[in-house]
Length: 396
Image (cartoon, rainbow, N blue to C red):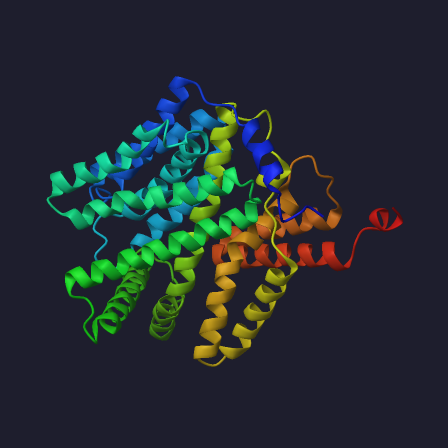
């Protein structure tokens, strides 16, 4: 098993392996970090968000030279685009995808710069980029609080860059980035509520009620559109009300879930830059391999199954908490489930082929159930690898 702790000598040896990027490569990373910081405060503009998303597509394709690699970033962005329709006041549906990509691309490119130019005595001028971004936004908008949004990618960049310099394992680095992102976003939310007078006693309940109404209205309109087309969406008024209530109950889990996905892709962007700009000849397994513990697999299975029984009649507080915990763990386990079935160069048995076709069919017909099924497969794979080792390994 790979060591979880690394000595100072090993960290120093790893840092010596990092080759400094060429001038044009450092300039590309610096420009993308700078424009990612600028894009976040202006993401409400459909023009700015559309231009920035297009730049991200070109940027990631230039780094990976693979359409399939773009799916890692496109799938969450598309889901956030769909989620925009369920949130009140989201005038620009590309706001969430733009903000998501700004955090991911800005955090990854900023971490790349920090990893190579972290000696501020020699490279002090890199500190001017976030300062210049903040000053530009504050001057253009006349709102110093809005300018603070430019610092969000910097927070991710600092954490990811430090994790890379400390030779932190990918799973631990992802968790660290996700925790910092969640904390920073919560602080930003508190500051926003304080500045807008949102700390009234009924503000949060009113916000939840508004979201519930928006979700119910969305499904009601969708049912009417399907009815006009001669199709039945098979949703009653009770189903729509329950779905709206469930969405509100799962908002905490969705928030931490998005933070985890953002952290995972921020680290992936950093590794992609290291490879594309030839900072390392190859990626060490410690940095590239994503794993989850046996405890996380057990927690997911336990909380998911308990939530089914706890909410079988009507939603309960305990069942809702279990659903949120399971939702936070679901993306990582689903990724392991997908990689288990669809990894390249791996021999496939009859059972794995059947499971792959079943998973694809369920994903097509019901994406939510498909992701849960993939997470179950990932959890079972982790438990089987731990408690049911292969005979070949047992003979060694």
